[in-house]
Amino acid sequence: MDKYMQAALEEARQGLTEGGIPIGSVLVHRGRILGRGHNRRVQSGSTVLHGEMDALENAGRQAASVYRDCVLYTTLSPCPMCSGAILLYGIPKVVVGENRTFMGEEELLRSRGVEVEIIQSEECIELMTGFIEASPELWNEDIGE
Image: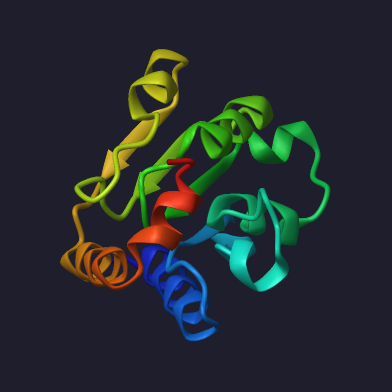
């Protein structure tokens, strides 16, 4: 696992420690993490603070040219909302920790020219599997079911 996915996994674990949903993300520009975040829906009472959205928020305002030169790392396949943000800002590559527990909008991203790399990290899979088994109601709320 590379250092950026490791950073996203650290964010996911932090979210779980805070009582939230263990999904983490980092936005990387030319080898430097611009923003890191984790799902904070529970902690903040938010409707939109998924891990990817939190990382984008924590990166602050960036020029369009910066986003077009970034890679977004996320521990879980991005949902429709997060995929929309990826497309809106023209992020060209997304590295996904796993998509076994949840398959997001990978095909949409690919159809719009985004490179999607799936790692299938056992650490990411185990983290989400354990969470979903322990908190199915909270998980279903997060994915809109």
